[in-house]
Image (tube, rainbow, N blue to C red; front, top):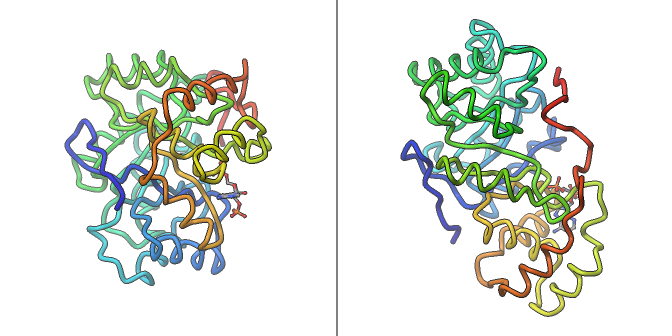
Length: 277
Ligand code: A2P
């Protein structure tokens, strides 16, 4: 069974979720139905992934009651104005044919636009209207979090950031934790970085008798972050979910910590400058 995390607004979610980036169309629906059937209960999507409809369809096909699932989507950079943001949340719900999202997050701060505080007030309003259970952000640096908290008095429940052994984000995690914000990890397996062939991780995996993917996901769990791995085949989906029956020792954790790179971002998207469409 998957442990539960409690958010700062009292809502709960599983300690691991399923990432759906690049899962689209009927093949994507099939992969998501499979993920739900093998036990995932948190599905992470985004308006910009253009797969909210597929997520909704997968939920209905899975036969699992809506209330047992947690569904996330995200507000794109081009819709951060207040009215557009509210309309976008409604559009996301319409695409998925859902009555509410469990989590709706600002996808990127886009600081050069100067609109993320306005977007945040829109999510606060959408939450009041009952469209969203929990509100949060992605890719927010401490300065962005400080600003929205100071200007609205509302602390996000979640901050979803790029996080994996090459980019362990110690300061960001400490900041989130100090503010009661749950850190979620995107690209938890370091997609596109060959992390799944890393010799140091291989050593740890051999020692604990698990796969490299399982070692990485367990590392996230022990840091207190919620990984959102994506996998298309059921065996891998199950493998990635099976990280609650073993523990990494402090020595294992220290060895993995040596893998941190000065800038370990897999796509070089720096939230301070990245402009999301
Ligand atoms: P696939 O989608 O073909 O199953 P991330 O979640 O960090 O973005 O990484 C996702 C990538 O890692 C995908 O290419 C996925 O392949 C691959 N992947 C996911 N789980 C595993 C696993 N257990 N073993 C090997 N590769 C995996």
